[in-house]
Length: 183
Length: 443
Image (cartoon, rainbow over all chains, first blue to last red; front, side, top):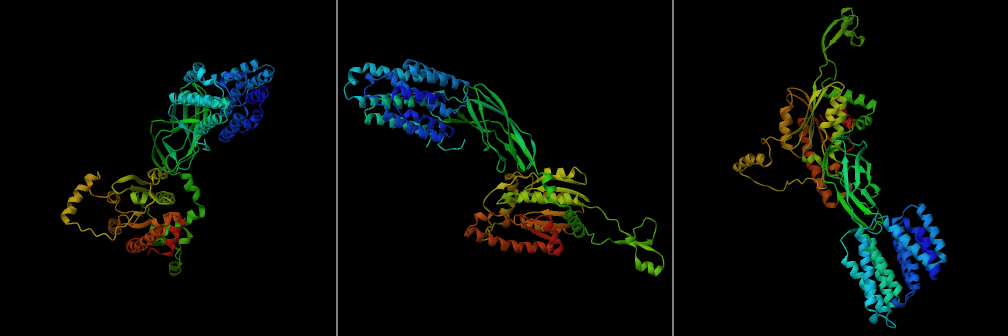
């Protein structure tokens, strides 16, 4: 529930309409496979609507207003937890953070951290940190090369490449659940 | 397609979208989703321990419970599903599902309905899933439990109705034990306490005083059920012959135990599997049912009869083989299970053989011929053709089955010249046997 409130408030603050579809997404969380398919469509629509053409001139708050609620929505819907007291508390915080972008960013990160801390992460935190630092490092170092007019496609390729390299570096073999398999 | 693959596909679609539409945000969203999956992969470290317990002696068709203690050895929340694949064929059970928090232990029970036989249960197989349902791992507990599942007495008793019981008992007495009519030992004068039914009216009219018949006392004789549990009988083509024979044997034993001492000898192709000495106690039916814990051998292929192949082996070779085969098959001698079984039989008893006449025809025929001189014998033989799965009938199998039917008919004629023989199908029980006896088809 808090993910839906966060997404809607984020959509309002960033001026995008796609996050208003998040309640429909949230309702499908009972059927994981259906949720994953609707999430795919949701993200493609969001990616089309939210536009940034240069990573060096990015509105970082706008990006956080859309990215973080999307990841939280994905995670909480896959977990499909029962709504508890923390949901009501964080939903309230999300609503009142409408008045300040900074406050919204802080609340988003708090909810993200609280959600993932429940799983007592260890190796995952290190992997994620390395990946984000690597991304920032590459773009800081390569500013003179990548910060050019019309270089959005190049920047998109660099981001994609870094994502793939990071994934391959930290990939491990696991058995994966089939779509539409009974559990 | 896997669930994770859909999310990976989404990431790549967002990268492509970012490149084509010159939109950095799409690429960043794809990056975030891929990073999220890498994070989950790093964090999925399933480790559980399952301890399990089950009673060693079970009853067929009666619900029983397997007790589990599941321990989550990690500090992460996990979902565990205990399946039913480790249970033997025929056992009914539902999979169990539970969620464990970090370092949590839970005690749970799984209800199962077993089927008759002796089994070695290998450890349970559990599927461990992450709470997001993207990844799983399999866990197998390496420990075996040996169990014995006995036929259920309640099932047999419920199947018998009171009037059929009495009728069957009367007929069995009448036709099988030579008690067609009570034999008169002598005539005597009527005394107080004598039954008026036994008054001999002709003698009374002749002598002018009440004369009664003094009857020969009915003697209780032993009844032996000799059950063939060889490989042919255990073959499960559709309906298991062994399950049918077990039910039939228990029905006959249950009826006969009211008046006679009943014993059972179960033999396979090489040796005696069980021997229950004839007794007339209440515990006897339980002992008999335990001796009938025979597991079927699952096969979709009926035994082929190589009647076309003519192998001529010299007598020297046959002698050599007779010496070698027992060693190869780890038997004490060349005697088969049937030969071992008849060694245990008393001088006189009523014998009911339950056997597949096509497996050891010559040997069975010679045994019955010899025993018929001193014993009353009845041969019950389940017809394997009637146990075949009609859904698996093809043109070739139908031709094969018809040929076997014709051959079997000839064999049955030969057996019927020696002993009363009744050919049985999967739905034939004691009432059919009694009908066959009334018809006198065995004579």
